[in-house]
Each structure stands twice: as structure tokens, then as C-alpha cells.
Image 1 (spheres, rainbow over the protein chains, first blue to last red):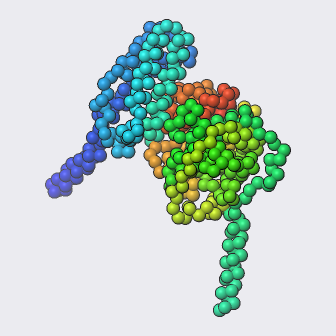
Image 2: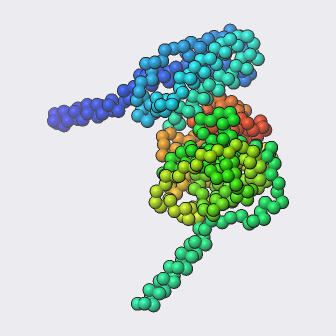
Image 3: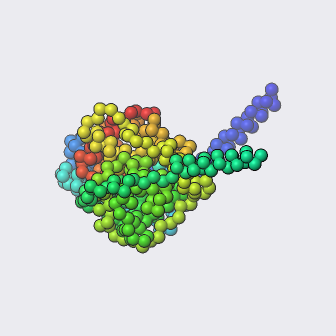
Length: 154
Length: 296
């Protein structure tokens, strides 16, 4: 009985060991990246619902959300995108390997997003029409990156 | 013994002959389009509704470069990797020398001017339902686009899928007449059905395929795994897509989902097309999606 228990314990450790070896070595980085994306999405919900007329326009709330988008664009993300943390090697990531490949224009796309975010920052608190006008160009920069560099969802 | 052998040979030859008659490429009658005249202006709408540029232009093309249909995008599948050909206006590298009937045979019958079957990665299983007037209009529009001399790449397809005649059998099995979503549809829903089932070829990705690569029409638009890749094409039947009609129109216009995620991947190319359609057409697609049978 003791032997069986010991064997069971060993087997459990072995299985757990295998399981943690399968976890991505970049779990933290990938999780943080997704967190940044979620944070931006929350701000865009605030802005977008006003733009669509689903929520009444509120200059202060719109300004706050736009400021937050800019703040997220200004984050230093250099440590979040290590080589090898792509969707080919990490099941939890949807970031395509082409981000890191030669010819990648991820930097330019990031810059375009930051610029569109600043345009939104200048517009969101002015009035609803200004917010609505800034929404399209900001969305285009989301699409531009997701089109080229985001793998399909599982 | 010799008689048996002779009989066997006769049966084999007749069998092969019959098989050939069944699987040979079938073209449209030569006078199919004789009463039709193409209109390039209307053809532009067919071009965007049909999504030609999404596969035949460079994947990263934007603006006017989307009209340079030089081919080159690759499409991996369980049957091999297909390379989109040059369909620009170049008479040698592209299809500049095609007449209207050549384009109609390609889209409606899946047959090249040389009389070969096309691989169904070219979505003729959907385009077969296109109006001939739309095909003729599209031909007129394509003739206005730039010529590009880039030669088409060869498909990377192994045996037995490199025998194109076998595609005749595939067509017999999987080319179906008639609409998938049938019944009493409003005019708007019918327009949406035409855009979704024929020109827009939504089912080519969003409908799961069987082992031979045919669309499983019983699970129309119910999604499925990306062939030879990771991830899934989403289920866009009412079983999973619970967006309002306005939400769908917004997505096909700006690419924003109702919770302000954005479209991505190849679907972003699709939205670049739908965004150019009249709003009434996007609304028609949304109305149609609401009528598709729910499928888990």
C-alpha cells in the first residue's frame, strides 16, 4: 500500500511537472499583452457607445477614456514581445510570428495607433461630432494590426 | 482466355470513356451571353461584392494597389498549397485576353479557357450562382484595371490532387444548384442571400468542409477549423452570432464588433470590400444572416 501511494505521489509530481513544462515560458508577457489590449477595449467601449448613440455623450467621461487610450499607447512594451512568444509556439498567443520577421511594419502600425489615439484625445472632450469623427481613423489602426498580425481565435 | 481479356479491355475502355464523359470540363453554350452587354460601373460593385482583390491583390495592398490583381497570395490546405494567379489585365501574365464567356466559364463552371478544371480554392462553387449580367459587368470592370506582368506561381499540389480531371468528380459531388437558405424570403433577404451565397462566397470559409473538401450545406455557416492552420472560422448562424442587424452592419462597415474589438485576419480584407458596398447591401447581408438556420 505504501509502495502504491509512493508511486501515485511520484506519478502526480511527474504529471504536474509535465503540465508546467507545457506552460508557455512567456505566459507573463503574453498575459500582460492581452491585459493592455483589454484595457484599450474598455476605453473604446466608452467612446464607441457614445459615438453610436447607445450612451449619452459626456465630455468628461469621453476625455478620460481618450486619455487612457493615449496612456496605454505610451506604455513601454519592449519587454512584452520577446522573440519566440508568437502564436506558432504558444497556444495562448494570437500574435503571429510575422511580427518578428523581416519586413514587419509593426513599429509603423504602433505609431499610427498612437497618433490616432492622440487625435482622439484632442477630439473626445470637444463635442460628440468630434468624437465620432475621430472614431473611424482610430478603429482603422486597430484593424490594420489585427489584419496582418493577429491569428484566428481558437 | 483471350476472349476474357478482350472483353475486359472493352469494358475498361468503355468505362474510362464514360468516366471521362462524366468528369470532363463542361463549358457554357457559346451563345450564353449573346444578349448581354457589360457595364463597368455596375461591374465595380460586383468586383467588391465578389471579393476578387482579397485573394488576387497583394495581401498588404491598400488604396489603388488593391486594383493590381497580380496574384501571389498562398492558400495552404489539406490538399496542398494553392497560389492565387495573376488576373490583372495583362494579356499574357493575366486575363487581359479573356472575353466575357471565358470569365463566365471560369466563375460559373470552374473551367479555364484551355478547358481545364480549376481547383475549388477559386470559389466557383459559390460564383456558380452569380447572375450572368453580373459576370459580364465584372468583365467590363476588370478590363479597366491595370496590367501587371508578374507570372502566376504554380500550385504546390501533390498526387492525386494534381490530376485536374478528378475535379470533375468533385464538381459532380459538390456543385449544387439552388440556394442553401430557401423559403419565403423578403426582397431584402433575397438580396442578402445573393450577396452572401453567390458573390460574397461567405460559405467557402464559414461552412465546415468534409474530408473531400466539399461544403457541408447541412451545417451552413456553422464555422469550423482553419485548414492547415490554427484556430477556427467562427459560426455565424443565429446559434452563435447573436448580434443585432445594426451590429452586423456596423461590423461590415467599420470592422468594430459590438464590444469594440476589431475585425482581423482575412476577414479584415472582406470588410474592406463590404465597406465599399451601398449600406442597403450590408443591411441585406445582415437580414440574410438572421434567416440562416441556427446550427451549433
